[in-house]
Length: 431
Image (cartoon, rainbow, N blue to C red):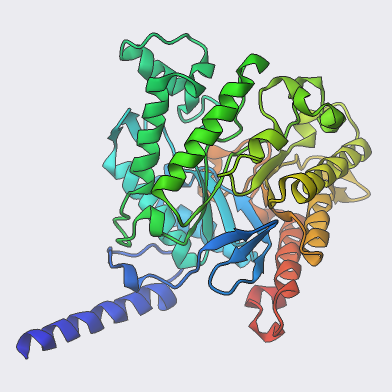
């Protein structure tokens, strides 16, 4: 009887602590202590796919996304900054954030060397996922970089050479060398089976993870390596599915068409885009890839074009990928990076807002028709103390009122499409 009373009191204490941390503590303040008990975490459902639509697996309702990129969350070194960014995203009605789940080698590595991890950094990733769930945000976690930033595929090649493997200096070896593929598979297994030190939930069982992304912007140096990328995507997507039956998987493509789809080459931003080994249709059609991904950077891809030409290009780019996803792939497509400079105006409107609105409008029209165009994520949002991670497309939304308003409007109208009772729409939609 005494033991039962102790357990009852302990359970009551933990429940009170959970309620306080979830509902009454300042949402921009990280919890002062960990309660790694799965059933104490906020309720959240997994997202799945039904043909060309994302669906909430608990209700079966269609899900169309408005979200953002903050690639730096793992490396922020500040829990308060992570909390603040997630809070601001939620405050604009966004439900998904895409971020890096890798830091290979370098001064602050998550993966120090193949199979060796920095536990302190891993706990930083634990916190990002834990806090995302607390804020009602789902994460798309990218698992390796094509670029050299934060290590990337080149770091895996360096590791293999240092281990005495017969590897060429070309980073394309990442996609084909047996030892390097094993390094990457071991990384996948470590990540997916990790138990979160804050919540006690394995990543594979965590609904705050929206999807796994195999690589950020996979490319290679020669089209002769295109079959290697295709085989690598198929192998790694299949492998991650053996570890995790709950989550969606995507590639991380920019969306370029290859010479295999000659009738689509005119959609590319230039001839150069067809020489990078990736193929939007072939890569996305792989069985264990659940949805297609596309990036959009008209300012970078066609820098000499004027705003009207960039707008027309972007309109065609989005239409082509939505149509191909609907008619050929029969899968959802997510525009997972949409970036634009903010320096130029036309008739008092920022060019960024003009271009972003084109994408948002097409996603909204797709959502109204229950189409394959399933969402867009702006690149990239940050907060004041994280400006060291800025690039040419970064912005603090609150300092850019027109963009802030545009983001909230998109979030609101997508939510209203699928809410029969408008009184249940989030408060930010009425502000």
